[in-house]
Length: 248
Image 1 (cartoon, rainbow, N blue to C red):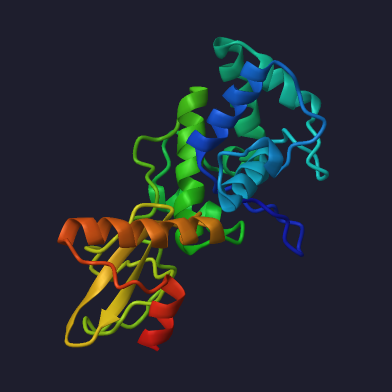
Image 2 (tube, helix red, strand yellow):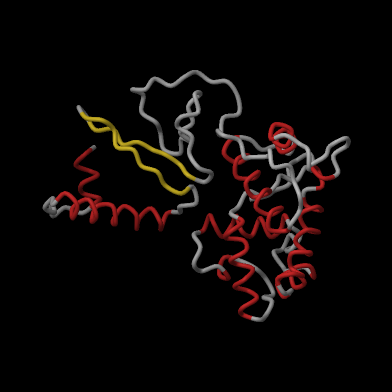
């Protein structure tokens, strides 16, 4: 997503570039520009993914604050592929002006650490930083904007020094799973949580960060079905709510 902080600094977007381009292609195929871009225009996306895509559109100057398409939106969406690439290059250089216009900075020779510092100056960190840098690199590549080949997203979502976790300590929902030795790093947009089982190792589950309430409901039902078929367990006859209550 992207937002303006109290001091007027606009944080970089950190949505999926693939989702962003898929939506743009979809609008072009439909052949008309909607009066407003809202979640109803993205029925296949989860709530979180739709919100992130809308925020990305705003960050690139394609939507105004009311989520209404700007003239640039139509220019970009309806352009053929070669022209679209040129428009995207303009969008990228303007939206990431804090990088391209940074005094004494050369994006074609910069290191990853230098770029990460510039992103952090926009009030982002952790897993958001990882995703924001990933979006930046994907957009510059698609636009044909040359950047240093050394630039990569941060390896971990860690923002500072923190105590090492006890390997026996349960990891809570939403933990980014990054250890100080870097061996447990998760891809951008992925969360890990563990389900403790008395007397046995915990069950580890990796899920997309963009899951909403409806997605979780569907996932819980699918998980139960797949495990039952895989292990040959017989249904208990209890509903998921009854099982949860019994386990408490």
